[in-house]
Amino acid sequence: MSGDLDLARMRRERHGKVANALEAQGFAAAVLLGQQNIAYALGARAPAADAARAAHRRMVAIVTADGAPAQLYTSFPDGVPAELGAEHVHPALPVEWPEGARQLLDVLPAGPVALDEYTMPLHAALDGREIADATPILSTCKIVKTSDELECIRRAQFINERAMLDIDGRVVPGVRGTELSGVFLRRIFELGATANTVDPIWQVMPSRIDDGPYSVTGDVVFPTPTTRRPFDAGDVIWVDTGIDYEGYASDFGCTFVVGGPEARHHDQAARWREVVDRCLDVLKPGASAGDLVRAASSDGSRRPWLPHLYLAHGIGTNSAEMPLVGTDLGADFDDALVLAPGMVLVFEPVVWDDGHSGFRAEEIVAVTDDGYERLSARDGGPRG
Image (cartoon, rainbow, N blue to C red; front, side):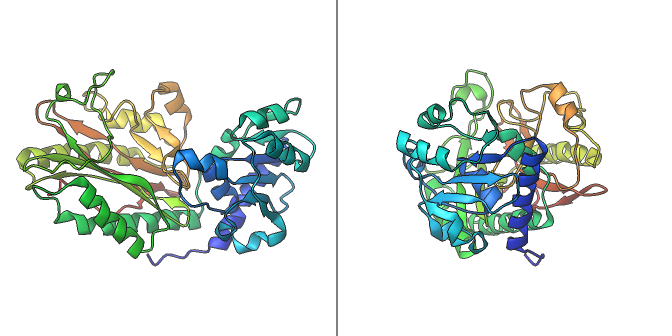
């Protein structure tokens, strides 16, 4: 983790991107309620909270097209970057209630406004205003990363992978997934993680799809929550973890075989490697997501990824964001998505042999001026 990182510069550049996008599309301001969008535009963070509590103590931000400092309403001033200035940080607005929604309306500038999330009182208060969806604006800003953003992702992934080294020797008969979660979570914070964003998944995979869990699509079910079920020798464990470093997510996936992999597990991993390598062979600026989809499927087999997920997804302040490759949006969507330097892709194909379970792993790359750079270090071989 020795790369250059300037967090203040990163925040300035992100805020500038949002302001410029608003001005270019004719908006006076963006009202942001989505916590990851606020983290992107301002660098402000709130503690993680369960869904029942997060909405009542959410941050609200107003970003204006003139590039002036944003206004932030929050219950967590200690999560606000110092450069925003105390005069721009205010007590939280309860926009889940009519009074808070009206107070927000009073401080909005005149003109069209982009909004990323509604509450019902806010919807009523904004009646008559020219409102548009802010999500496409933020997605456009986020899709190409700066060098500082790439370094944050690289550091997050390093911490994630380094913590997983402490797991390697612990996946033995009798251990429980919840025990592995405890070891992993303690280690990521020792290594400098800012937050945990994905509850660690240690899913025991069936040999056959018909063995369950049940799926209305008739396909492999993943992910499911970690349980206290002790692992048995020969269990195939699909792993998924994600942690944050300075607001940026990582994504780690691998396959453990309790008691150690056999020849068929190595064969599945090699086939997974072939899929990813075919994608990397065509990955460069100007290539489309459709090119990646066709490369992954070029051996004539079924699409080698879970249909309810994707072949690859972006990552940044969200654990999954644009670009999204191989979704159910179809070939036209994939062909219209053209790769550019600074985009980040997390490849997560799967290999499944019904009757013999399957293999999954994840690999993160950033598109460069002439190809790609790996942001993840661990290979995709089976573990155990």
